[in-house]
Length: 432
Image (cartoon, rainbow, N blue to C red; front, side, top):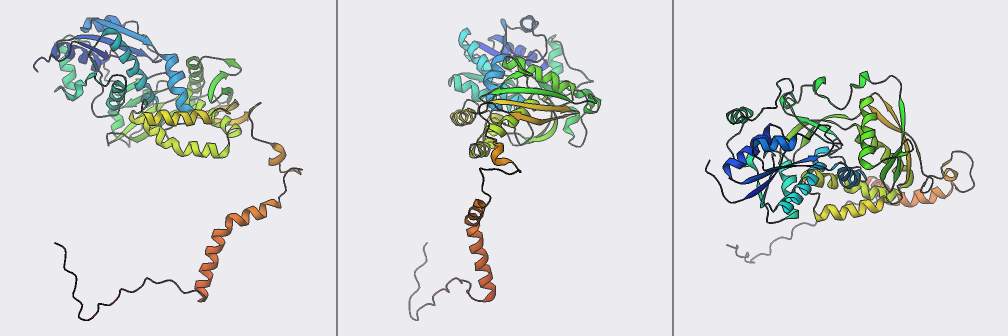
């Protein structure tokens, strides 16, 4: 491929894996530009100190590693969890919610370095290309975006490996674990290889964050999670930062085999894709959040919020985190959380997390005086009669109408017959 000279400096979202290592070298060769490698620390559980040196060895002029764990949890994961957002009822959006933050930090580095282009390793088949690029353009509508998978002729894993061997790039692939994965503090995802057969069960050796539920402790464990305005702030009475709190819940979930999901999801680009996910702490967090909401949140406010969650989840999945519609909807969601203050007790046992207790000292809407099945002095059961009759009125009227039709008291309304043509009247000319 002939060299391109449209850009001078590129910031690449770089993981150090096979794809982005090849992309780094390819950018320097094809664009003849300075390339700066950037890696986001989102709690992958990997040592990232080697990233700058590895990137420079492959041709980068600089290498950045940015610690985003607290920002990720506080400003991205927690706002999403205030909505109980789960895509298609199953997926906790762990990869989806990370992409806008990765892109945000990448654009900050591009501005700092005076770069005129950014690049990513999304394959061109999935959702990540959309998520990255919508975020890029949000921060700089004139930025040049280079997506190698949409430009080069390396269309297979074999072609990538051959390219790497010719240029002395280490190939960090494993025949034993051939699937691709993406990990952060919220989850880990797996795609490809055996998972491309939707009938095949994911092998046990695939799982990283959770033990097999059958091997989890035979005794349940209880954990208490406290919330303030919809955000978790403490675990078992100990206040923690957002990232440390989520990490703590991951420990509980891992121990008890909680958070495994195997699903076929609908990608934004139109195809179905199978993914296996582990979201141990997030699964516990979502269950606890619902528990506190159930005792503190007004019924109609909850139902209104819930009616919008499907759309909200799609916005995140499809890459519209920075869109005006998501931001407006977030304002409503955050307003709905002002009374979500209290704590939930969660029972953890062999792959399951279940609310078994909830309480709020300041905002509980549960009033035992009204809800009790025992005798009370505040509720008159007779009041329900008129309430029920008024709400049944339209159905009673419809039932009366049906009975009258059966008895012949009311004739069914028929459509009027078409008027006959008048003799000698000329037909209107047909329109051409």
